[in-house]
Amino acid sequence: MIILGIESSCDETACAIVKDGREVLANVVSSQIKTHEKFGGVVPEVAAREHLNSINMVIKEAYDTANIKPSEIDAFSSTVGPGLVGCLLVGLNSAKTLSLVHNKPFLGVNHLHAHVSANFINSDLKPPFVCLLVSGGHSQIIYVEDYDKQTILASTIDDAVGEVYDKVARLCSISYPGGILLDKMAHEGNKEAFSFPEARVGEDEFSFSGLKTAVLREVKKFTPETLPKADIAASFQYRICDTLIKKTKLFADKLNCKTIALAGGVAANSELRKRLSELKELGYTTQAPELKYCTDNAAMVAACAYFNPIKTENSMMLEVFSRM
Ligand code: KG4
Ligand code: ZN
Image (cartoon, rainbow, N blue to C red; front, side):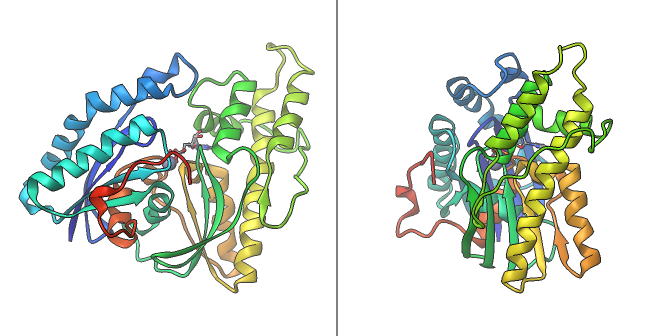
């Protein structure tokens, strides 16, 4: 089954064509980073207009790359939510239109399920597994019991992990997009330079506001010229990744599940991937999406449309939603 997927929930306009949920025939991503850089973050209204400008181009490029005609596509899919409403509308209406024009089914996809599905691309991973999903908008530990049976085991009570990365980056005057640049800078620092606290919260909760405040407190002790950015980045990165991996392992052990996966934009983080990988020595099977499938992309949408589309009587009636 060949599925065309569209992703437009935030600041990436993307189209991909994927065979049987695992084999990528085309993966086109048009990023708006340059547009939003000057604002230091994503401006929803501007993002929606950018999606409109790029959408036809990325769809055409996907067809060209896959060397496939529209008539060879078995279903069209798009992210329905959660995300920025104006942005989601562009992808959803494009995919619905394609499905009407070519008389093929439309499959709606939940953005978070799509991030989890990124793990199926070019891999033979099968449920059950425990998945740590960390993106700019969400932080969850999910039990993926089956492709379409997923239970949230823990989630954040304040900021999402990606959001914390971006905010801490801003505190350290690291430019947008903060997460990836902070990750790079952390490699030049000493992770023991600062001892940041681990939040004391319930077993099924994450909280990062205390960590953010602790970083702010340290930053205030320096001038912009003397700020040891790399040491702060390394110490912060060590603490947050340690918390995430420990908690994920805890739930995997509780469920007696020996397979652990990562998902979401922060799954691209080098320390998080390293810490996950170390669990192999303890007998776990670990899985993380290839870097290009961690941050927002449409291949994960098409994969999710194959394995776990939104169940509904009439998918053409699906409407965008901003939150879970
Ligand atoms: O999944 P994603 O592309 O978009 C959302 O659905 O939110 O995630 C974007 C988030 C941003 O907060 C970005 O800073 C973070 O992922 N991110 C990273 C890295 N690459 C992207 N955070 C830490 N380290 C990275 N290497
Ligand atoms: Zn995302």
